[in-house]
Length: 521
Image 1 (cartoon, rainbow, N blue to C red):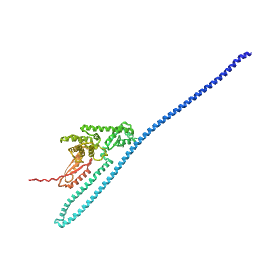
Image 2 (image 1 turned 30 degrees about the vertical axis):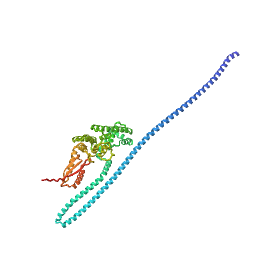
Image 3 (image 1 turned 60 degrees about the vertical axis):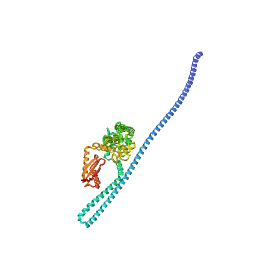
Image 4 (image 1 turned 135 degrees about the vertical axis):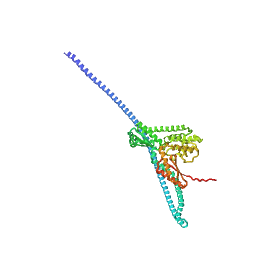
C-alpha cells in the first residue's frame, strides 16, 4: 500500500517541484531580459535625444545663415534704391533751382525792358514838347513875317510851313532813328535771352509740330499699363528718356514730347518696343531704354561715318562726324537738316568748280555749315556761331570756320567759300517745296508781300527774295527822302506783320538811289 502511494506520490511531488523550480527560473529569466530591454531602450532614447539636439542645432545654424544672407541682400537692394532715389531727388532739386534762376533772370530782363520802354516813352514826351515849342516858334515867325514881309499872310504862312515842315520832319525822323537805334542796340541781347526763355516755357503751334512723336497702340487698355500703379511706369520712362509722355482721350495713340530730337526718337522706339513686348514694368523699361539708346548711338555714329565717306571728307574728327549723324533727327521748317547739309555741300562744290576754286573745301564747309544745330540746347548763341566754335575746337581750318560763321551774315565773310556756302544755303532753303509749304501757298505769300510793299506812296517796285524771308523795296528818290526810308521800312514791316502769317521773320529793306546825269559836249 505505502509502496503504491510512494510510487504514485513521489513522481507527483517531483513534478510539482520541477514545475515550481522551472517557473522560478522562467521569472528570473524574464526579469533579466526586461532589464536588458529597458537598458537598450534607454540607450536608444538617449541617442535619439542627442541626434535630435544635433539636428536642431544644425537647422538653427542653417536658418541663422540664410537669414543673415537675406538680410544682407535686402540691405544692399535697399541701399541701391536709396542711392537712386537720392540721385533723382538731387536731379529734381537742380532742375528746380535752374528753373528758378531762369524765372528770376527772365523777371529781371522783363523789368529792364519795361524800364527801357518807359525811357522811350519819356523821350517821346520830350519830342512832343519840342514839337509844341516848334509850333509856338512857327506862330511867332508868322507874326514877324506879317510885319516885315511883303507877302500876304496866307502866302507867308505857306512858305514858312513848307520850310519848317521839312526841317521838323528831318529832325523828328533823325531823332526817332537815334532812339530806335539806341534802344535796339541796348535791348537786342536782352531781348534774345527773353525770347529764348519764353520759348522754353511756352511752345507755340509750329514748335509743337516738330517736338512731338505719336506712338500707335493696338488697344486703349495699354494706356493704364503704361501709366502703371500710382504712375510708376510712366515716371520711370520719362526720367530715363528725358521726355514727356502725354496720355489723353485720343483713341489708339499716345504722344511723346521733347525738344531734343534724339531723346524723342529714343523714347518713341523704346515705347514701341514696350508695346510690342507687353511686359511693362520699371525694370523692363530701364532695360529697353538702355538698349534703344545704344542702338540710336550706333545709328548716329554709322550715319555720320557714311556721310563722311559719301562726300570724301578727309581728316574729320569723330565727334564732328557723330554730330553730323545727329542732324538726321533734326528738322528746320520741316526740312531735314542732314539732307539740307548734304545738298548745300553738293551745290557749293558745283559752284566752286565753275569758279575754279577748290571743290573739296567748299564741300567740307557746306557739309558742316549747320553743325551748330546738333549741339545741346544748353549751349547759348546762334547755330552759326556755335557751329564755328565747334569747328575751331576740333581743328578745322579758319576758312571753314569763317564760312560756317558767315553763312547768315552774322560776321564778315573772309573768303569766296563763305559766299558760296551762304548762296548754297539760300538755294537749298528757298527753293519751292524744300520746306513745309505748298507751292500755291509759297506763290501767294510772295505776291502778298510784293503787293503790300507796293501799296505805299513813293514805292517804285518791290521784290520778294530769299523764299519770302526778305522784301526789297525800291522807292522814287524825288518822292521819298533819305530820312523817310526808315519810317517807310517800319510801316511796311508793321503791315506785313498784321496781315500775313509766316514762320520766322521777314527782313524789309528800303533802297533809295539818286542818279545825277549830265553830258559833256
